[in-house]
Length: 150
Image 1: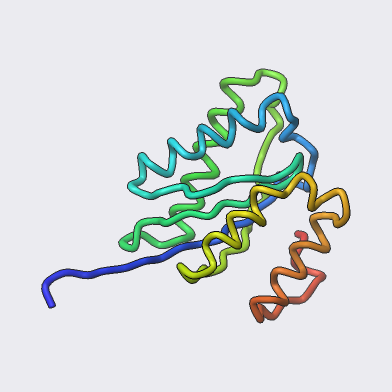
Image 2 (image 1 turned 180 degrees about the horizontal axis):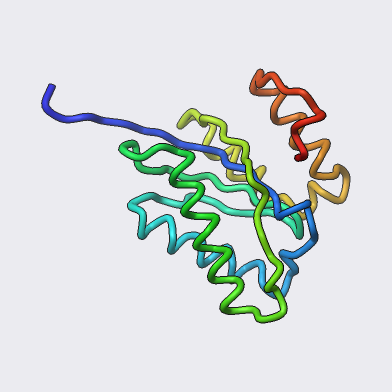
């Protein structure tokens, strides 16, 4: 077969450095919009983005010819650079080193989109730490909690 066909949809989750509440309401929508531009420039598609002051969820279709870790490194570093340049009071801003990445079936896209779109109300009931551990467990990801947050 001469061509490759892929449908790789990812639910991506990562937090600000040390889970600091740096993504305040006044900058969050601009950061989210800029993220869409970064992903488009990398030949991906951002389907949904949401989050709170200390973390972000993305539903995206990314390139299949580049490692996921490379793409996330680029997305995070370009966003950090842009935040530093655009918001002078955010010079200390950074992203955590790691991330969560979970495959999404096309049949579950709408469900994941709603989940991401409702992050603000969701986090009135549950903190990020609890949420992330539940996502890991739901996807059968083995982890040692001592290392999840460092």
